[in-house]
Length: 169
Figure (cartoon, rainbow, N blue to C red):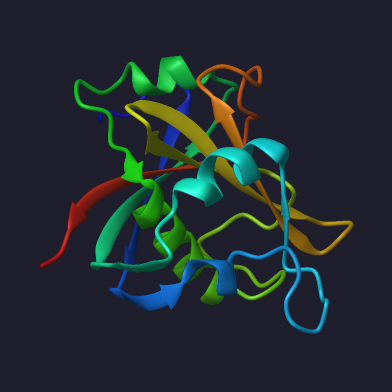
């Protein structure tokens, strides 16, 4: 993808292989001590969690990270690609787990923790959906949301968009 008027290259994120984990043990709204871990929006809970495998693992990957320097609709971002770079549901969950685990709470890292979304394009039932992770600066918890293409108005200036580049063998 070439540099555009609304996407600024923020480099790559290299993630090592994600070891096998039980999906419901990590992606749960409360842990065993009833401490909130995530807030799942209704669509995330209804569309993403039910189709995820019971156990997930993933190979190492490079993700391209871009910053929106102007507002943009999802369809405009995807139009930049002849073959849209999307993740499967399981791969998305594995890499998000790895990103969040490497960046506990409000620490700076590869994900934004300023209330702006971290956006991923995910393949779901033959179509592409938008899934984002937003750190709630008031609740101090990750909010995970899922949207259809262009369902939720323009993406915010300052949001990060992540694209898979390669899978290491």
